[in-house]
Length: 534
Image 1 (cartoon, rainbow, N blue to C red):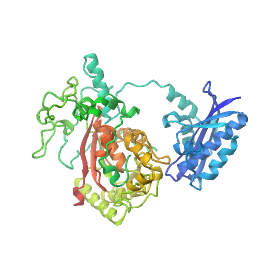
Image 2: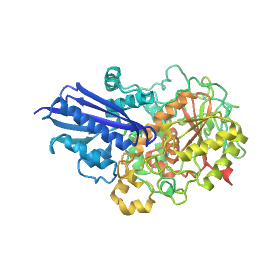
Image 3: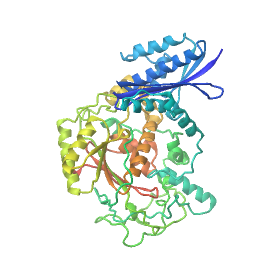
Image 4: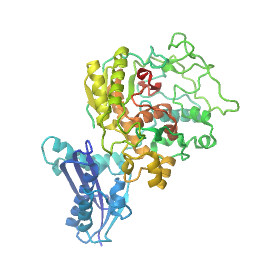
């Protein structure tokens, strides 16, 4: 009997919003594309689009070989678990679609498998082509599709050396370890040398530099924790994941297990910020009264801090020095968490898969206070916001005060908390204890009902960071977003382990800041500043 593979996906730009699906039928032996299907379906949710993609893929397979055995692969945990019979289907929009999918082939002839999103690129690209066509008022045409070629190219692309995206400390650690192993100094990124950072930085609370240069190009493109205390609780997961974003953390698993975070921090430090043996040149960097001396990007000079007694020091990377060429003004992200909603003081999970609440009266007052504080600083040059209502309203208040426009960036949205949306931490513990334990123990575990894992959010946020640092090189940009994206940006900049997400306080309407330099280094300037709310 003939066997076929069906890969399907769906997406919604807004959830609900303009939506489309894509599906591809493959020969399991050769990987040959046998059929493709894609369609723009108007305004719908992600889940509806995913189910419609599944139905289209199964029908395409049946047209080719009605008696086939079908292996369905999707990156939607919800659809895979529901169609496999392990999760109940409660949503009224899902039930008829699931029933339709179940009727395409007789029972027992279809099996389902969940795959990571990066392995479902063909169907994902088809879905995006369909949405792009719908945006132009057109139908998706197979003859115009490049999804198959794009997906093949992505699979066949060689893995690049660990040059590292801006602000990703793990890549710098990989370069340092490679240099130590070879006995040579760490290689500079292509087109750069040394690790010099821009001057004019400050280490004081609430300080970030005034950027001066224009961006190259600004192209529109298309975390985690609830808006409340569950993310602020001192819960400590113990698992070190094997996700690619966390690869460098695997190299220091032993120090994580032993609690030796001094050694871990040294091992994860990026080239240019690893243990220094000399103080920076005089005049580089500034200090606040009573603060330790600082080098470029506000990094304390050697000799100003000491490790706890008995701490194990990570080996220092070969010195490149602070005196390398000036890399220019950084792209500085001023990270603003939105103001309160009705769910915030009740400490309920409020992500991107729920009701999308507006700012409360208290949240609106917070937004106005932030706007006044940012106007007084006078350094913000651009504003980019999550698409969710609470962020768009916060950004709008600030934009009106600063006289700037707001750009919407889908990658800044909060985590989708699945079935936990709107619940308190205690309610989740009562209803889904095993799922909650798994979520707390591993960044790869997703909330009940098909939500996003921390690892998934980290990939999305890292990709968004890379786009924005390229688009706004040398600029100071206000990113109005949520708990998880902000904590993830800080975590990646520090090269901190995933459990650090549970160890950061991040209040409503708080300000944090990270600067990203052209040589790949990052500097965390500020975290959870709420002085403007007092």
